[in-house]
Each structure stands twice: as C-alpha cells, then as structure tokens.
Length: 320
Image (cartoon, rainbow, N blue to C red):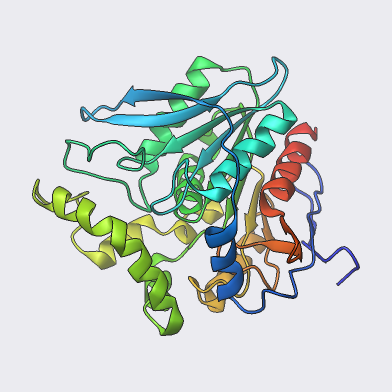
C-alpha cells in the first residue's frame, strides 16, 4: 500500500487504462460495521437544489426523478440509489453535490415508493432486479438529450440493478453511455441474503424492515408481486453476477472486502469473471464496510467514495 492508500489494478479497456487511487481507510473506524454505520448516523450533507419530475410508466404508475441542470458542454450523471434510499440518503446527496461542483447534469432515479409520496397504486414495487424501470428512465433521458455523454452510477441495490441492465443490453447499450460505476453491489442475492441473516449483520435486516413492512403489507393486499415463483427464482433472475460477462461498457466495481452484506467468496467469484471481461474493472479495498468508504480523522472525515468514483467516470468518458 502506498502513502496515498490502496490502488485498483489497472488493465486495458476499450477506453484505455484507468487507475483508481483509494485513500487509506480511517484508522478510527475499524472492522466492517463502524464504517457502515458512522456516515449514516453522523454525516450531514446539504441538499443540492433539484427539480422533481414524475414520469408515467407503461403499467399506469409513476417514476420520480430528481433533476439537476449543468453546463451546456458537461456530461450527465444518472444515479440509482439503494434499498429504502432516496434523496434523503447521504451518499445520494453527496453524489449530487459532486456533480453540481463539476457543473454536470444529473438525474437521481427514485425507485417506486421511494419518493416520499403515498404507496403506488399498481401491483408492484421496486426490487434488486427491476432493470425494466432503469431502462424506462434511461430511455427517456437519452431520448430527451441524445448527444450528451451519459455516466451511470448505482449504489448497493441500485448497483445491482445497473449491472443487470448493462449485461442485459450488452452491445445494445445506447452509444451515449460512456462509463458506469457500481458501489457495494450485492452481486449474488442468495449469498447476500444468507450473509445478512448471520451475526451482527442481522441488525441491518431489522433496520430495513422497519420501513419495508408497511409498504409490503400494502402491496400484498393488492396481490402477488413481480411474477417470481419464489425466493430462489428471484435470486437467480435478479443477481447481477449472472450478467457481468455480457457488459460492454467500461464499468468500475467498488466493493470493500469487509462488506458485512456480502461474503468474501462472492467478490472472489466476481473478480474471476471480471478477468475475462476487459471492460469490467474491480477495485476491492480491504476496508470500507457497506457504502461506508471513509478516510481522514475524527474531526475531518473524508467520505471519498463520491469524489473518487466521479473522478474515475470523468477520466473514463474523456478517454478516446
């Protein structure tokens, strides 16, 4: 490890060789759980002014998007948030703030039921494999601004959805999509589900259930959801690890090896798949927990994920 911290391995992609410099993890947040929890509890990020639009879906629902205007010559960043996230999430606000500082355009796609409005009326919600809603949002964004370079960024559940969409589309991804980043994506949903059911990680499951229970009860009253025959079918059809080999856009995968939501063996499998796909770059630092990448000291914490991943996207889309 250098004085600057850990560095991802670099290898040629269709946009050249890109290296990601990772700051040294905060010494005062050891283990997997403290970095995962600290930012969620103590971090405060001012809200960047955005405009909300609500777009109709083919099934009679609405998809909300928070939109940020940028410079005429700047790229557009499209963000997909994690489980029960949204505009209130510190990482989402941090990414929008980073985009604003760079003069970029940005769109935060809010999964169904995550816009602070009432529960939607149709018999579906959002889930880790909802790439059809990602496709709906991206198709509308591209059609409305076809010549602007598009940079994609997904966090946790949103990262899984993004990777699944990239693999599904393969060579058919719109030409304006220049690069993508997935942060703390679960990759293998069955393995992630088993991992979060063990030890201290159970606390995270209970945390998410607090907000999901009411939504789930309301949706179940309308009938079966999403067309899956059961959990095994849902995991198999929705896990992004099954789509990584088909990705044809320069894509960075940023996951901590000590992520309490995911077993280390899953990252080993992902790295093996990525070795055979030159467009997929793995950066797996030893520390960082789940979406908890923090450096600096207690009086000046550096939440570096947003800055570093947007730096990578900036370099990736500019390369010939």
